[in-house]
Image 1 (cartoon, one colour):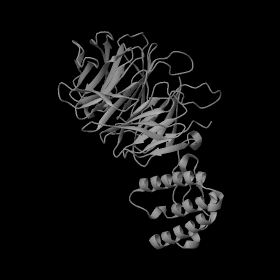
Image 2 (cartoon, rainbow, N blue to C red; image 1 turned 90 degrees about the vertical axis):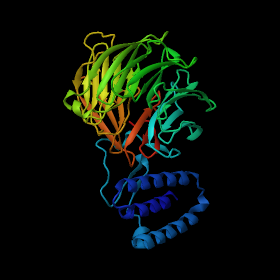
Image 3 (cartoon, rainbow, N blue to C red; image 1 turned 180 degrees about the vertical axis):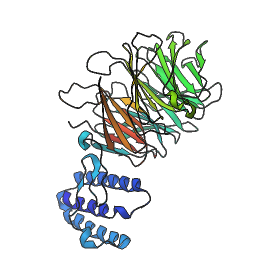
Image 4 (cartoon, rainbow, N blue to C red; image 1 turned 45 degrees about the vertical axis):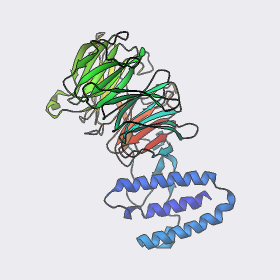
Length: 453
């Protein structure tokens, strides 16, 4: 019976080169979505439906013949094969190849409840199945993605696109910010908005995060170049809790103890700040230019993420930064080993001397497809599987691919998986690495299964 559904999809694949000839991405997305639907139907159907399926195949062949003029005997043949594993479709036209092993991830589910680009995806802390999604359609969503995929809550209230979302340490609250110059605190269990905060300068807010050591304090960055600390209990911005960067703040992250904050801007700089987690006081630290040779172009720093464990060898605090500069930079340090992932590259920063102010030093660069979109990158959870190829970085790409990178002391290995029909803007892995979520510029979210290695 599954062969009948495979023949139906093969008929679609045969006619695929005639669909939207000026947009090959839409053709690929059509086949992937159809393959997913047929796979779901084939697992639910009973054995007495075979005759119905065969009649559907004949009807489908007739429709395609009338629409595209392809002979029905060819449409009904089994000369084309479709592989649902990894959603790779064998077509008469040129096949899309990944640069490495296609078996690395397999698609589990696809969500399309958001109508515009996905700005951020994030799994709950130490929780394998809860996923928060932010979209430029002005809404957020909380999804349960395991064992079954379903939308638990749609969070509405922002008057414009949501630019960032962040979980509290105990997954009780969600923090979101928006182009409408507001910051909202949500109850993650009920989906209700608890508090609304307005930016004092009435500027759109690009990024936000809870301070790890004190979730009553949050840090936000806005379009006017202000980095600010906010007390969500009182709604007050503490004295000396703000700092001017000089360019729009595009992204930020905190270290594990909440003592350091790194903020990126749209001119290609990373700024570090020391923060007092009790009072919210900010003190400026270091300022590092990612790629001085293209300073006049103002490469946009699109995401920064921190991890205290970047490898299996032990504690290795690292910072990963995405930047639309078509270059990958590796900055090394004894205390902080900081990878910065650029549009076409990943940057790693690190200090030879223990630098409590977050200074960085360049080490290496690697290419990645990232020219202008606001693409995010993340660290992959460190696994201990012996002999396996284990990536420590994952990033989206403007070519619709998901990039997995393994960086060691001597080399960088990259694997690329064709996934979406448009730019992959956000990626997120859950705490144990069993699931990966990716979101694109058209609002499509895909859930990928555990690496098959």
